[in-house]
Image (cartoon, rainbow, N blue to C red; front, side, top):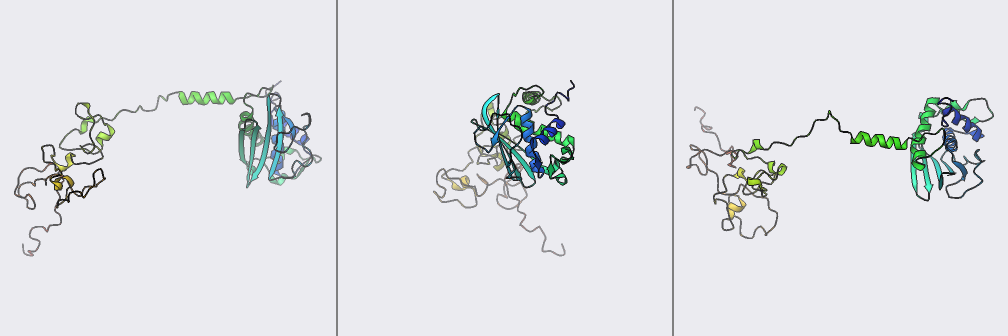
Length: 331
């Protein structure tokens, strides 16, 4: 026996069963609901009646759908089934939603659900219907092609049967749910040799005190002297506080205190004591500490002092001052 002859879900077998299980099909939704019924019978499910409750009708030998099975079609179809390998009653509900055909499965008792939704026109040919078992038109013409009908069978098997009845055992039926799970796990656990390995960033290139960085200690919080942790605002982190080197040298006792609020809170004028409640968040007005010295030869505040200006000293650049000789048109 060839592999195709041993496949109980072969498209030609399911199409033949569908034509035997119904007397008419009014539209593509009837066809998909009836095809799903034939697929379930092929893998050993037993038809237990119409509806969505747990009642069992008949002895499970009836295969042909009863009269009125499509009375609510194409909007809704409700079939019940049992299976000798399970004590549950299964409900298969086919619903039309716009141009979609949604098939839902439920195992009553454990509330195990399964769903598959397809675009109806991707599988069926609406111009073929209505179909009657008495005419000579092959039912396969109600679908786009036999290959597309086979795709529907595979989709239904994967998303409905293997979810409601994992490990189902029947000659001619292959349950590959465990194989798919094992393959997925193997692929996810196998490292990719072509993927570049991530390396830790090198922070040693940014330790020049003349050029303090902002944000470095947030990436490497243990970079402090002797492996200690940087305190917030002490430099290198994204929090720029009174000890940050961007505001000059505050380590020699030049930092402001409560007795010198102008150094603590910055700004040209000192803030009154108690202006900022203890523990309150406060955004500084200006640079902390004393005003930085200007290089020799420039005016403004501190113009009499000399010495090189530190990078990032916080000194304002007085671009608002007029350039020399701006009012001498003959200069």
